Image 1 (cartoon, rainbow, N blue to C red):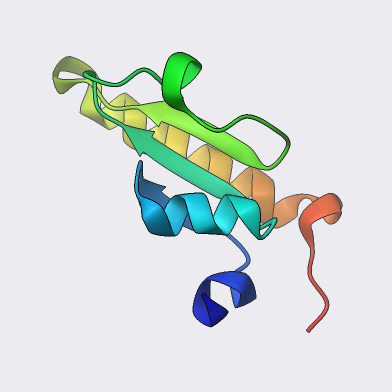
Image 2 (cartoon, rainbow, N blue to C red):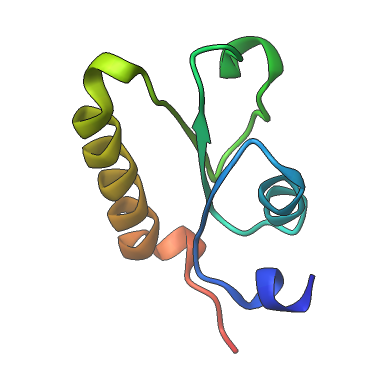
Length: 82
């Protein structure tokens, strides 16, 4: 939990560490498979970006995730003071 709370951004699958990051207010890019839809099961709120990874467009999903990380890192609202 300490490592997660110190992170500027967390990228992960729909898993415990990603959900922990969200509850700690750490900007999170969460990767979803096509079997679970983030609209139905995903976390909501500011600082969370869901990326659905489908077999046919994996490259697009990578670009979406990279863009989301860049956005969070550039956003003054999510800058942390250590």
